[in-house]
Image (cartoon, rainbow, N blue to C red; front, side):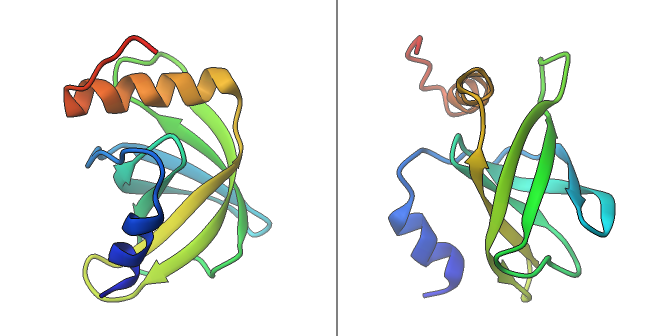
Length: 116
């Protein structure tokens, strides 16, 4: 079982295979990544050189049908070097409004819109 499968078992929120641009800010500066999947609890970001585990980051997610980026703070919880290489981010600080916007996008993608 790889890291992604282990964390999938622990995941409490549905994750959709949505590819969006995500801007990450660290102490070393900013960089753009592309997501492999997204949920209200976090995301997996594709990267040839994944960030180190426990890195604290600021994120801006550029979601479809949403005019301004959704902002959050997060922590890298694991990284994967084999294909697809990247890292998983758990949101540690996110507004309820930002969480609702992500839920809206994920629900529409999964076809599970429930009006929450």
